[in-house]
Amino acid sequence: MREEITTCIADCCQKLFGVQPEVELSRPDEQFGDYATNVALQLAKQVGKNPREIAQELLGVIKHPSVAKVDIAGPGFINLTLTDTALAQVAEQKIAQSLAGQVIVAEYSDPNPFKVLHAGHLYTSVVGDAIANFLQAAGATVHRVNFGGDVGLHVGKTMWAMLQQLGGECPDKLAEIDANKRAEWMAECYVVGTNAYEDDEVAKQEIVALNKKVYQFHSEGDTATPLAQIYWTTRQWSYDYFDTFYKQIGTHFEKYYPESQTAGIGLATVKEHIGDVFVESDGAVVFKGEDHGLHTRVFINSEGLPTYETKDVGLIMLKKKDYNFDRSVVITGNEQEQYMAVVLKAIEQFEPELTRATTHLTHGLVKLAGGAKMSSRKGNILRAVDVIEVAAEANREATGQDNDDAVLAAIKYAFLKQRLGTDIIYDPKESVNILGNSGPYLQYAHARARSILAKAPDTLTPEINDLEPDERSLLRKIGEYTEITERAIHDLLPSHICTYLYELAQSFNRFYEHNRVLDDPREATRLALVEGYADTLKSGLTLLGIPAVDRM
RNA sequence: GCACCGGUAGCUCAGCGGAUUAGAGCAUCUGUCUUCGGAACAGAGGGUCGGGGGUUCGAAUCCCUCCCGGUGCACCA
Image (cartoon, rainbow, N blue to C red; front, side, top):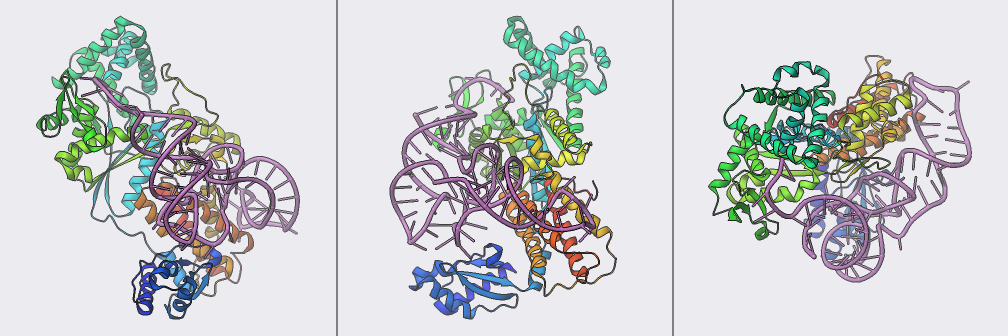
């Protein structure tokens, strides 16, 4: 529809003025019509006439069966109003399969085993899940993967404290830890280990030694010695804990890439390119980012060990090997933005395709409204469970009941409605507020529409013409869904859909306030609108990863 | 110092493929309706779109510059 009209207008310009402008159709305020174009303003200079004159001439020529009315406004805007049938057609358009046939790997969340999931993990999981949904909706085959450090100093710290608790290298004692408290126990151990590392020189040496042993478990395939048993068992506890958490928030991963697996291939790749891409400097192997307007980073340290940079190189190689992707989307906090730019620039030197196929999206921090600062040293970070708990509590206070779906909707919507990249000041009360722009509000809006439909007679034939103004307004809003969603998919910005869904719900409420649906002469038409509205809302919520329940 | 991100109503934020009167939610104030789930609707007040320059017929949106806040810049992840 859009394309047809665009072409029609372009042809008219060609005929009248002999020029073929880029016609852009925008969605103006409703009072102006369904579409608007500023071609007349664009053409003014080329044609040498004033915009309103040009618009006036075009007015007489633009003829399209879907366009009911054309008029001129302001400095020379051409506003188009569609016929009701055309508007209904727009509302039925499906999301373009722009990514059909593509294989896309989406990597997000990236928590470290042996550590606790914090608010940032919750945020990136919610965002990543929505974006993965988007890519799927556009026809891509999406693989959701996760990357985390199962080796490294943090593991040594946790292990050190675990050994204290277990009274030595006693894997049997692990059985005494309550199965439901495993993750919590490990998180506490991490905090104890971290503090010991900073305060106690002896402990620090022991932690460093443990860290080396952990690397050996991997290099030597040691799963049998007591210490190795502790490591492998608790490492699995971490992955179990992640799985449980992801299930709780309604997302999932098909693969975890542990750092221990990416280090080798990364190291080999970097070593291959010493000389042509990487250079030795002060005993380390670095990539000189300055040559590309970036900064220098170390890929292999002076002890010959791979740094995170190299593990990321290995990761991208492994993903390519496993999935042979057309595109790779990586979502992380924005503190990694410039770091990643260097890694990708380095990879570009020897595998330009890989860099070209990679999109790095970054997001901000989650802070609790009120601005309580937390010390990570004491482990007082804002954990993922804390966010869920304060949301559940706020919801309980507001509604007097527990509702996991509503809590999830509240959190997800609060995170997603803001443009990606900025920090989130999360206000639990506001997020569960059913009177405002919130997830539960949209869930309710959906449930309410479904309940009307549930009472409707089965067989009715709607007539979509001669719509009344309120009906038309709603239909017009429903019709924006596809293009908004396509834009959200293109920009990988969930916030576009959030803004739209809220406007859609408002549009419905306005309609519903003044128009009887059931037992009305216009029942058939209105029910069709209600259904279109409910389906659209559900479709949008589902893309965002928010459960669209029929009752609440 | 260099780089990246942000600075829009009291608060939290949309808008940033330039364009018809700068929007929303919350908060404040005022109305409506005996409501198919009122978790509604209508309306009011509240803005030098961080400052200053520039490009343009037209800038919150593009460019330059300055200020403020956050983050990142060699062997952590």
